[in-house]
Image: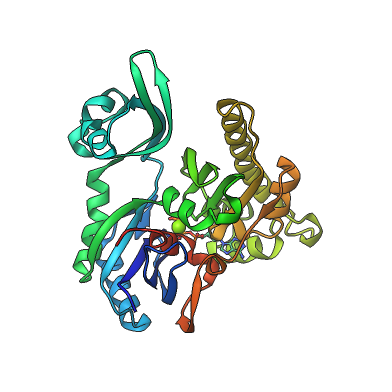
Length: 346
Ligand SMILES: Nc1ncnc2c1ncn2[C@@H]1O[C@H](COP(=O)(O)OP(=O)(O)OP(=O)(O)O)[C@@H](O)[C@H]1O
Ligand SMILES: [Mg+2]
């Protein structure tokens, strides 16, 4: 047994954790996983609002899940995170990272000292003034991040790192078979949607949208004047499959179609952007994850709309699973927590 590490995903609807052995391996072994639900309003748009509730949920998750370590990697991925392509003079990566505050201040809405900055190199190019590195700049405002980290610390955790969720998903879903392919990752949560366009294992474009499955539930509840719980149940039973809706459920179907349409347009725009920026290299496949992508008929709809094969793989099929694996919650909901501890240097 090697070093153990837990990916801790504080989502809008639940706190989730996945413990792995040897996280630095491309296929680490999952030892245990679990989920503790959160009441509405405890987390909004990726930011912890009610710290005491979130801390209590993390505590209970550890007690019930039997996790053996409190060393955690946490995720961040809300629409306030900025991710964009930049070019910087080619230097060793640690020097590039040190120079970021000076290079990117103009791109940031806050002083660089108030942001966490990182750079992910994609390619080396020749510029007018010498060799350059092109890659992705990632900037996240520190203050809200610290609130999330502090909620974990208050539960007794030792956060080792905070990673951007698009990169966690990239590490999980870009397998060796996809090394020569281009992929669009579409992760739909309750309040956030993450789009990542990959060439092989390298993310070239990230888009974080402040919308998700909860908007559909809310829309149905408002249009049909029913409770959120009833709206959620109708949403799950009808999805975007016209044949499944009774006459009474028709308005729910319409709401789902309207909101899914926005996601489809965002997907198409991202694919187009990628293709234009990558010398006409099109997206070969779409990999979907997150609870919102479980909407009945959605994967098929995305595939029909984009004319690109779309799938929703079991995240645990990407790694090795311990023989005595146990856990609570649906494995499909563990993709982000697992990605946070896949292929990282611990
Ligand atoms: N079977 C299903 N059919 C339709 N929608 C579903 C299904 N299962 C889950 N969802 C939706 O998925 C959403 C929750 O997804 P997920 O658990 O990935 O979000 P989260 O991590 O809590 O939130 P976020 O990542 O946005 O902070 C909810 O809106 C829920 O209604
Ligand atoms: Mg989530």
